[in-house]
Image 1 (tube, rainbow, N blue to C red):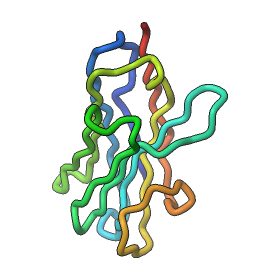
Image 2 (cartoon, rainbow, N blue to C red; image 1 turned 90 degrees about the vertical axis):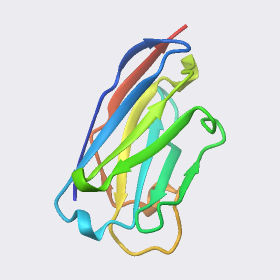
Image 3 (cartoon, rainbow, N blue to C red; image 1 turned 60 degrees about the vertical axis):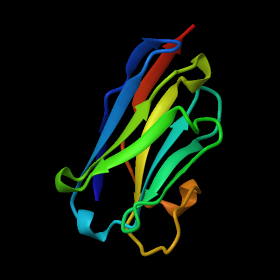
Image 4 (tube, rainbow, N blue to C red; image 1 turned 180 degrees about the vertical axis):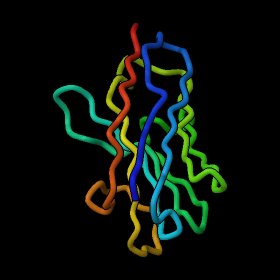
Length: 125
């Protein structure tokens, strides 16, 4: 599958932003979709993911209650609604897909086999 993320930008602390990811190719083979982020000088970290069949969602503790992941099956898209943004949320946000079967909702980047190019979110204080 191919992934393309979009929707990043420059916002102020406390603002909201929604980033999107469109999936093309073998979308029917998806088992998990996820959002990860990488801040300057830091390792890539898990943000949220969804089990494609179950619809079950999991979130990183740092974004729980502020971020919401959703999907539009008909359009093969996933979204990450980010509210009450903080400067520490500044990062490149990547969407990721796993096409191999998994019974679990995953959070380890090594478990995902396709990645989008990333979209930059900058939160000013």
